[in-house]
Length: 342
Image (cartoon, rainbow, N blue to C red; front, side, top):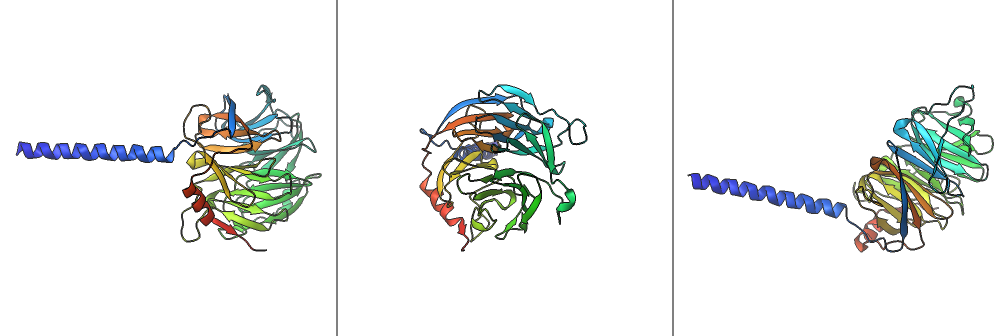
């Protein structure tokens, strides 16, 4: 009888060991290392943040970071040396206090920095030196809202400022800050959004790209707001090639870089939504990621990444080459691409 019990104990132990091995193999496959080749070189990481969510860079490689849990925005020069945090007065002469700073974009033409403050429900606009200019919207009564306005991401192009909120994209005039338009409603169909976060504009043609986070997809738009394509959820089911796309940026050559936060990697696609690369691995070492968020790419092809759970911002130098994607991923992305006809 005791021998029988011993066999049962051994069997249970073996089952536990096999389950552990299976878990480790699964985890390794999810955190796979993809050879980055010459696609980028790691420059440095800036530490000392608490939940950094947003980054913005200008044409001189100066950097702004939303240190969200500390309710502040910090500034750095091209050598990653801190210049201090934004510390200024608001329109009433009171000390400006951030609530939940998130998405950032820099308008080099006008010398302005836009910071989304989603719980404060507005976008703060500053000079590059950190002096307060005004808030978006200039007049809150301009927005005809069905849901509370919570600005998450911001992008500028030409004479327009584009801001994501829970139910789509809001458009403002870049010169005076006046409200112009609202694209979308809340939902999952073409032209609808569900808590979109990152937004980026292609400096070459004004096309807009949105990380439609809770729909687990990336949406490409014309400068007028018409949907060009959607990349993410398979049409035949509920699976998606993205787990949670949050940050998005467009390089000088039009390539789109997306931080897939829950996959701990970066996805690169071309302007037509074709997969070019997936790279990244979860971890704490240099160039490893843990829940990446905001992305910014400067004209000199420096990539700045808010590495949220590692409480740091990483700086990489990109090149023209990117790691080749797995053929299976290419097939999945092709299936997940929906092109909207003219």
